Length: 437
Image 1: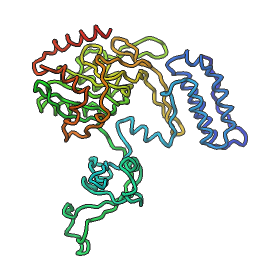
Image 2: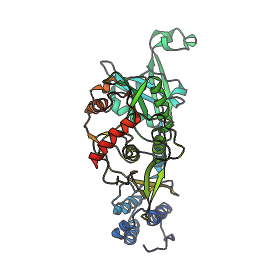
Image 3: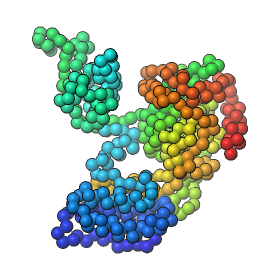
Image 4: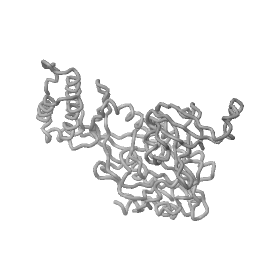
């Protein structure tokens, strides 16, 4: 690829905000030109000509939003939805989500009763809601002045990710401050008002419970919804809790998991795979693959393991699934996966926006292509629609999942898991692998 002079020269009469966009556009072009994983794509797109067109489009812009829209248009020439720019106004929320956090006031509201009243069913530890005094069981009266009767559960929960004024109703017998109330206060349910601002709340997206195997054994069930900074810790805690309940085989549910931090997937793999295993191979624009070995692995389980996948299993979750499937560590049950086998470098830009540039391809331990191909499960299975969100918290068991056909298939292969040795399980998976290849 050629090199262009990326010096920014202010034009007479140009508004400073538009010059900031011009600078961001030029920096974006430069990062992609220097780091994009496939130079053939840049050549095919005629990347230098794309810059000239983009600068021409920028000169026609009349406001900052119109000018900024030129940047994603420029990136669209790569035909890579994962190389993208996130505007400054959305960057902090995106970073929080990617790190395994969400910007939130820290409660979950669930419709309950025949009238569908919105009730607090969860309060996150050390969240704005908990510090303000909101409790599980409180009923929502209004949010931002709108009566709770006028909003649905689906409509109200997104509003909890930004500043919100909540009026809640609580039964007085649940309140610890009755001594400070006047006689008139005691004539009806207690109403409280909370003015809350969201904060980054760390999420451990690991739900777990137990299932009874067909042979009476105990099966541990873990569901990972994404990969963030707390995923490995949450997985470790879940496995230890399930071990205390007598689990001898495990189901790792990655259905609907869009991925997240690759390092988080690596750390989870260290809990499930032995020392010196290959997690994946990575290849940058040089075209030379390099192995990513699991070092200091501390596997907590080495017995039978099934991984559930579907068409929404993507990115890091696919890499983890492949790292378990290729060495015959786990049996994959479900649907063909999404097929995102590329990683992005995250670049904070000077204007507060965030640029993501696809800079490496990822392949499985056996160097099977994942990107735009996906993983083929060992056993095909399509789950019931009602099984996707069958249960939410560790305090519940997984009985609702018993009718899931994919769970049933896993249980069938776990027959005798209480006595099945690791070598026998691996031999079973090796046989399936031969048929798959």
